[in-house]
Image (cartoon, rainbow, N blue to C red):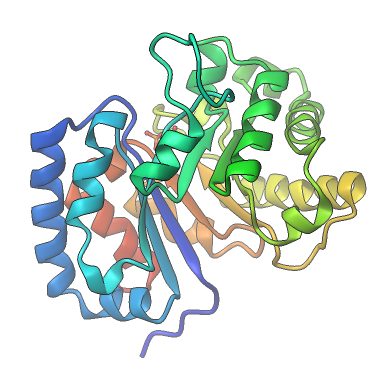
Amino acid sequence: MVLILKKIYLFGNWKMNHGLSRTDNFFKEFNNRLVSNQLAGNALKQHLLELAFFPPYVSVLNALGEIASEYKDSIFVGAQNAHQEDQGAYTGEISIEMLKELGCKYVIIGHSERRHIFGETNPVISAKIEKCIEKDIIPVLCYGETLKEKEDGLTIKVIEEQLKSAVDNISTSDLNDKKIIFAYEPVWAIGTGLSATPLDAENICRTTRDILKDTKGSSMSRDQIILYGGSVKEGNAKDLINQENIDGALIGGASLKVDSFFGIINSCLGQD
Ligand code: 13P
């Protein structure tokens, strides 16, 4: 008998992987696997487990079309980024409204690759978060320190700046209504195989709740959903999500293959 004590969120960020045909193949295999996995199927139906996939823009519709109807309220699709303006001369960009129209429930905002490769700043990320709330799409706000910042003892300062800036114009009631999901992703742990230890990740996720409470007066209860991301795999997922203040995981590499993604699902549900 498996006892699931809290709702678990497992989100897969596919980054620039899986175009149309690979997305179709992924979901064919994924759906077959789900049919034979009673534990995962039941957890999804009972809303004890939520899954979300973040494919490249071009694959969003295919991904949405492949989700079996019985799981449409516990498996969702989101995008990896969006622009903060409604429309206009922004070549190559996609608006939040457009994603909403497609059927996305979520959009990742402020991923470290957006911050560090594409130069997104805290003010830009803050504007995107505000637009998401206005358009009623849930941002998955990524924040986290670089290796240098960690080594310089700046982790708390950096995440505090990132968090405060992101929620600056967001009301406390919107925060308490779970209109933002938080994803602590230490940059040094992304794609490196070097995950934060469960205790270190737990400390930052608890500190996240403290920062939100101190700055916005938000509730300290389980009102905020906080994920951990950075080299999550089958072997470490369970210990991470078993921490009191970690509600789930944002998974990169290990979400690309059905096998490794189900390995994580099964271990989190206690079916190793
Ligand atoms: P990895 O799981 O590949 O380390 O990527 C994490 C990530 O960036 C998720 O957004």
